Each structure stands twice: as structure tokens, then as C-alpha cells.
Image (cartoon, rainbow, N blue to C red; front, side):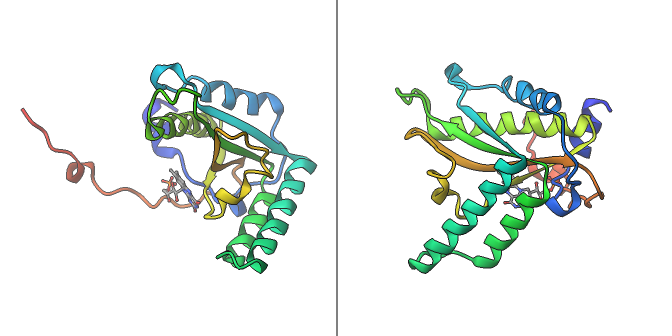
Length: 188
Ligand SMILES: Cc1cc2nc3c(=O)[nH]c(=O)nc-3n(C[C@H](O)[C@H](O)[C@H](O)COP(=O)(O)O)c2cc1C
């Protein structure tokens, strides 16, 4: 695939469309190495990742689910059907990579720039996955702010969700895009 094909073939492939089959550590490392080459302002390199596979991934799903039940009982607004769906999703996929933003101590650049840099790192992984015929999905459930302790985040870190990776079991249809012509003004 050339660059245009990789970009246009990249899909958000939901967990139930991914195969549970293990992904090799070398392949996951390839994605992470490419993530690390994302552009970033003032060389802050704000992306951090935690790779969950096997028992650690299933333990994570259980811990998150138990926490959400506890929060719900304590009166927090938790949508339990979404919590169920999240648990099922993370159990279905072979790899869940926690996407973490780490601000530098001096906060030399604004948070939005750091989020942009982490997002570009995620896109690097997503496009790499597409190029090697793997599917990926970025999950950003509303309860992310509750997960700091379970994800063992440090004070300057924030969760930006999970990137699931797996072989594509079934193609997920593209929602397509509106024509770029309506999103661009040319000034000549
Ligand atoms: C920052 C970000 C967060 C996302 N979070 C979710 C999510 O929580 N659940 C979901 O179904 N899709 C999520 N997506 C994926 C989009 O739904 C998906 O990209 C969109 O439907 C377009 O499909 P495509 O990527 O296959 O073209 C997210 C995408 C981005 C960029």
C-alpha cells in the first residue's frame, strides 16, 4: 500500500470485529517505535504507553468494571451498559495500549499541543497497524478520569483512552467523509 492507500484504508475497527489471536511482541514494539517519532513541540515527547496483554489485560478489565460498579453505588453518573460494553471489548482484543499524556514539569507548551502530539503518536501506530494489515480502535469511554489509580498514573499524567490492536476478523464499513472541498478555502 502506498501512503494514500494506508491513510484511506485505516479504519476504526470495533473489538468484536478484531480477532483475539495474539499479536507478537515485535509487532507491538514496531507500532510503539513509530509512535515515538511523532512531531512534538519543544521536544517534550509527551506520549506514554502501557501495553496490556494476556492476564494483565483481563485483570485490568475486571478492576475497571469493579471500580465502576463501586462508583455507581456511591452515586457517580456511570452508564453501566457502557461499562459492560467496555469490559467485553477489552476482553475480546489481544492488545490494549493505554494512551497517556505526560506534561513536562515546566509546562512549556499548552495542554492542547501535548494532546495533539500524543494524538499524532496514536495515528502513527494506527497507520502502521493498517500498513501491516492489523486493525485498531481508539476507545475513549467517559469514565477515563476515574482510572488514574488503576492505571498507576503519576501526578502529571492523564489517560487519553486505549488503543486496541488485533488482526481483522471482519471488515468494518467506513463511515466515509464529506468532500474536502467544503472544508477548504483557497486564497490565491
Ligand atoms: C480521539 C478519538 C477518540 C475516539 N473514541 C472512540 C470511542 O470511544 N468509541 C468509538 O466507537 N470510536 C471512537 N473513535 C473512532 C471514531 O469513531 C472513528 O474514527 C470514526 O467513526 C471514523 O471511522 P474511521 O476511523 O473508520 O474512518 C475515536 C476517534 C478519535 C480520533
